[in-house]
Image (tube, rainbow, N blue to C red; front, top):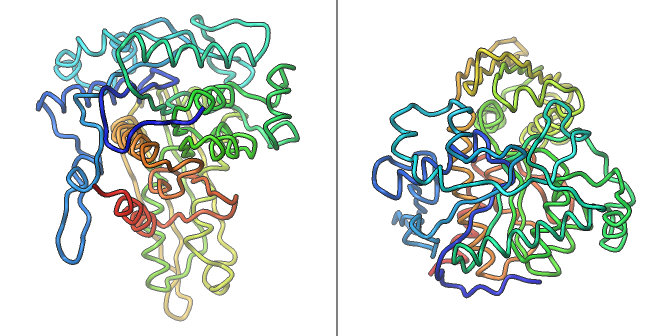
Length: 419
């Protein structure tokens, strides 16, 4: 069924997240404090950004009709039964005083049983998990969860943002190519259909927009992209652009603009949270590696400038290091060359907080997908590439990765949907 919401926002908006871990609970806590005026929504383009119109800077909140923070209702699924409060304590991202200020809202979020299969996330084991004879039955259970949540909490609309773990690498196959094959695969428990795909199908069938914050194939298969387009449901993905990849999409456009050559870019990360534990499995790391490696391709055009960018050595590593917790450390060694081919190096040491960088993206994507749904923009929302490491494109072509070009595309789409 398609989303039939009016263009103007009305009533409460459910923000439903598969995976109530560090990112989701940090988002909930921050949004809770921001709507009470206890913190600033730093990092959120929708809350703080503006658009230049003929020399006049118009706040995005004034330009388009976004759901206000007071109208958001938080919910989701998790493989553990803990409330968002307990999950936030375990994640150990936020200071005690900030958690305490958000305690009431966090304790109110109790996860629904998750769709989970350890074959796809090998380093986690779930205790709060749905069981059903087929994957189609699991999808129908998720659809029922979405509708029940909306009714129980008096929500007029819903939107989803995947905040769950990275699944093992899955290659697209015949079951992913068209809806008939995919639905038969759900009924047959086809191994090529992962839990994230089951969620994606359920969201689209329920008319609920969905953003994919992980590098999982999830939404990124022809069957579900066509279903979203045919039913008018906005989708966007994949893999939140935070940390090291954000730095790449800031620095690489500068090299291209100045015609500076690049011989190699070596990136390594140490990370200790649940995401780090998941990515310690080679299958899940492969999914993340493919997402991270794709980012330089469209920024540094080797077809146009082969002498500068044809033979780039690009390496990405992630190492699980428990003492680091959620405070990831990214090291980059960048080998550039300039006039007369003389080599130079740039070293970047980014001590970032993954969930702090990702939380405002959850907010923006939820609000912007809801806006897109109210403007009848179904299918892949290419203009939301700004938020992703490995953006989806409507035609399956090479995405734009240049952060500043992505921002222009986002601004243009917002201008088309202005009040």
